[in-house]
Image 1 (tube, rainbow, N blue to C red):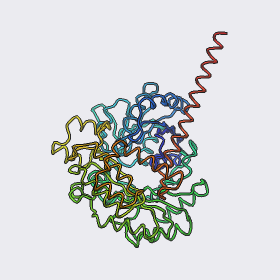
Image 2 (image 1 turned 180 degrees about the vertical axis):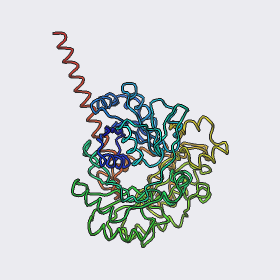
Image 3 (image 1 turned 120 degrees about the vertical axis):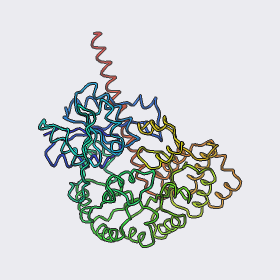
Image 4 (image 1 turned 30 degrees about the horizontal axis):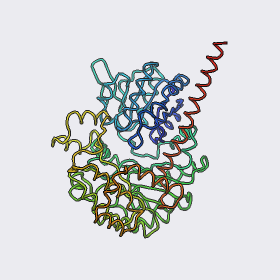
Length: 512
């Protein structure tokens, strides 16, 4: 049997957990090494602090101790450069096959195989493909004819055909939570789970449209209610979590499934939970079903209220539908989080101000946003590239995960004003409506320009999360993020202090 080592950033990865379960079920040995990669993400990146808290040497020691037969990375575009750098460091010291999977690997496999430190790329779902690869490596068989696995051959890249998606998700074993939980207790407080895969919508900026194009609507699948409840019952016996976080892209797309789920969840699990929903799928009936089941908050993907933008990105939604979704959640006592993307091509400050005015009326419990980021393989990238809005250099950076731009295109000529208006967007749920209107009408919100909207958002959410004074959302994402930083910061400081002390004593002994 093979010894398989997964390398992960500090955030729980359900894909790794599922692959670990499948491998263990077949007798393979599995281990996980976590790179905290502190101060290395778009929200709190600091090169000096990242270098200070670098753990590459610790990770290499764990690789040496476990002595794996293969090393696996699961990457999205934002984590690709981190994983690539670590893979290069591993390959310098160890002659071990390295496998890359995840959505970024699925979209640009040729680019990854151009890197000598990557031996195999998993294109598509990884559970069965990685299992086949581990089986062949353990038997020392040829690994160049595995469906979903691309590699290098004597005549170039070997592009093996895709295998069908796993149609019945119930056949998969429950995710191996222990692989993360044994590393750090921070993961045990919230239980992350998915009831299905894919999304029936096909927004041009999202990876789901890539997968639907590749597999068709068969890519959108869902587990049975009984299978989901059985996992949660199993998990409750093993772990002390008090909150459930459903990670599905659109939890509410089937009202019949929600009805069955609600009854079973209320009777057998009875814990507060969070889920994501498309505004088109949120109604008074759905909100009532969620509330009765125990739902405490819902994040609604608004993205944009500009009709032209929605048409441009194939987003099926309207302002009145978003308003109805927020009102339905409020009526049933469920906290609402609205998620928005700023910086779409053609949008400017006035669009954002209209968004602020809309939220000052509808009053969601929390407004969050991200800047538009273009990902490889998406339709929006092709459209912008064809229109000359993206240069060849930018296109290369996007494919390699090196794109540092916050937004592409658009008619925003004054970035400071745009960031200032974004600060106002963050403040909307926490200020009286009349005061928001006053700030907009007088343009006094421009005084917020001294603040960073991301920093302001973090401060408000931290304040709310710890003192429960502003807002009422559970905000598991922030809680987990803070606990991860706290845990690994002190852990790394401890490791480095111990090493320094040992070095000093070693020098002292040498002198004596």
